[in-house]
Amino acid sequence: MKLAIPSETADGLTSTRSGHFGHTPYFTIVEYDNDMNIISVESVKNVDHDQFGCGGVIEYVLGLGVDGILTVGMGRPPLMRFTENGVIVYSEVQTPNVGDVAKLFAEGKVDRMSPEAACNHH
Image (cartoon, rainbow, N blue to C red; front, side, top):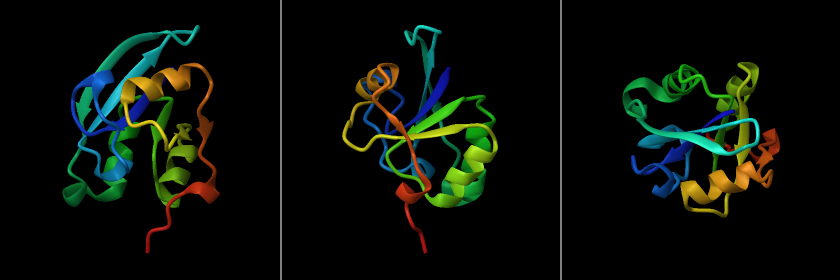
């Protein structure tokens, strides 16, 4: 299982989570084994949202080969695009640290994001 977590810095599990996936500076890619133990952590720089738009960010994340994305917030169109492409979107809004939320995910304490929970952008 490979999970992307929007992050403010390239500090891996010690990074602070980013509040919204599209404008996140980095993604921390956490890979788990079958027993949900973390086996690798990598920080990757996000593409420039202003240059590539939300669609460009979505395509970039899809290209990372992740199985899921764990975000604080995301609009409905990106949620649907990820879902249509087989990437499960999870949401957790309480935990500011990447490592802590990665642990919660491994423990099965993070839920899938419902379309009703998506941000509404006008």
